[in-house]
Image 1 (cartoon, rainbow, N blue to C red):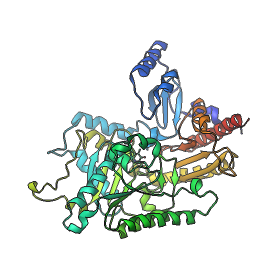
Image 2 (spheres, protein in one colour; image 1 turned 60 degrees about the vertical axis):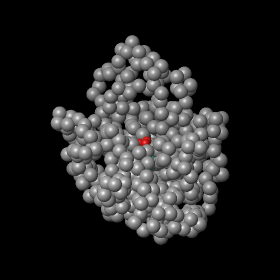
Image 3 (cartoon, helix red, strand yellow; image 1 turned 60 degrees about the horizontal axis):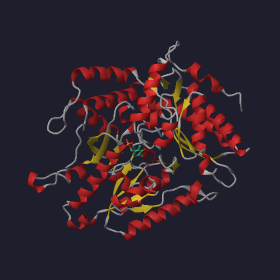
Length: 479
Ligand SMILES: *Cc1c(COP(=O)(O)O)cnc(C)c1O
């Protein structure tokens, strides 16, 4: 397993050759400032401060480079946001032009050109009858808004019988962001426990998780059992459920827990039959990650509310959107003094620069035929993963399109994990960094989520390094 191309990482990066290292003094100053003043997301700062930070200074294509001048392949698209590579010339040019024209103007009152144009484009590409675009700036707010919209829609429904719908059904292991509303509809205990008294209650339905819950059993049967549980909750609260909230095809943050399009279609139908709205969170799965523009297309499912963020700006600027049907939007129409208005908005709602990046990213999809071209990379990834799947410490590989989770286990015959204190996922990721590949684990799941623009050589490097590092790290731990 050692004849893999892992050491060639720096050589195949597209950065021009020559030293790009900052001076030792500058690096020292940066590292000190970082350790003293930055409070990092999802990070135990005690361990962080004790280590040495990886300080990124620039990017080229699918690569990032640190202040020492070392290149790293961006194997998780800078946490699932980048689509077309960094500093894509089409997006950079559009942003430079927009920056000379208009930086920001409020969407409270006036509107602006890029926000209007992007709304029209999003509606064109969105599944089903989504006609209205409400902007915000993160995946968390996109979900928060969808939840508030669904709640208010029913609270002021013209049919009084519908006003009893104030309950949300959400999924175990769901992740929808970190604001209190999006945490309330989430299902990852580790992130949610401490805030429990601040959250509102939801009905939790078991999401499919055959590997951990029904090891060795039929996936179809497991998914059917999950559907039965979902139906049971909807029945028990008939006439009271406002919406079902879920991530279609892939529960990302939970560790890439996948379900079938068949399950998604059946769950959506159960919600609809119960008179509930369907809120799909495509913050991670949207914009081509699963091989189609939106994951729900693969199940022929059309949501009432669709949450978008992460890839929406090509991964360049913070932007999010909650798309709604005309029917939901109509429910908010009335005279001022009827107070049917959706009282929600942010200072930077519809920021012209972020929307320009979104428009340019969609132009890249068209001009470079991205969705057609990525099919070859998906096939290549699937083939490489077949080799990985044979490794004695790889228990499960879950994938839709380029979204991939590789679960590293102690014993693949039983699915028994390594002891959590061994941090096997983190060790694999640390080792990969030595080989010029930047990825991030979710527990013992090694996540691959390369940009849609990844080249064949880069994809071989990514999978080769990951296989090599899993092999090395597990051999060390087992001995
Ligand atoms: C990342 C993510 C969010 C939260 O998005 P932020 O921009 O980090 O607030 C919500 N839902 C899903 C499915 C995500 O993957």
